[in-house]
Length: 211
Image (cartoon, rainbow, N blue to C red; front, top):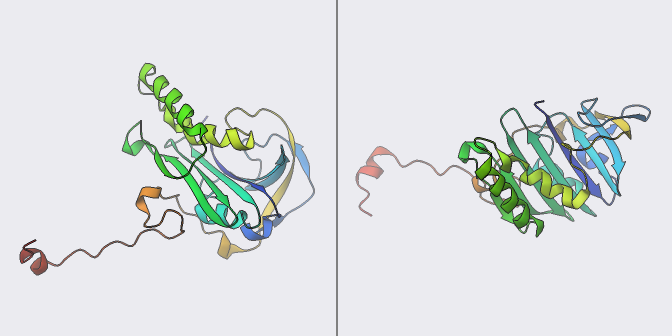
């Protein structure tokens, strides 16, 4: 079906302001997957979910911002290019991340920090499935399945209705969207800035470098 979405699930203070969003109207019922509006919020299983049809919404910065005074979990998936990821943060600090990008191979997983213990079993199971299902990107599901062990929500399997609230952007400066970088591409995966490119030595420097 080519699903593309991301969500941030929080426990703690309301994270609307930290995400630069506000309610846009009255609550309404329906299925949250795929999101019926650009941004929605709903409560499920003791978590508050903020969801977007844009997979770039669940960035490290937003997950960290949403975790102030509590905890937050971010998940993104883009089935058109089969990239996915999950981030966990506590009290304004990124704790772990697990991401998959098939450009680095079907077995690729970029793991940083201290992810939940369930990761090992999920990874082993999907690796085993990869051996029997040729050319099927089973590890795409690892971040999503891992997040589901925490917040009990899997957008690939959820088939119920919830009461939702449409959201609007009220802080455009907090809503800059960009593709989530792999942790391996960052100087400090727990921070929010990509690693600075080391300046390439000039021709003469390379020519006389005798190391």
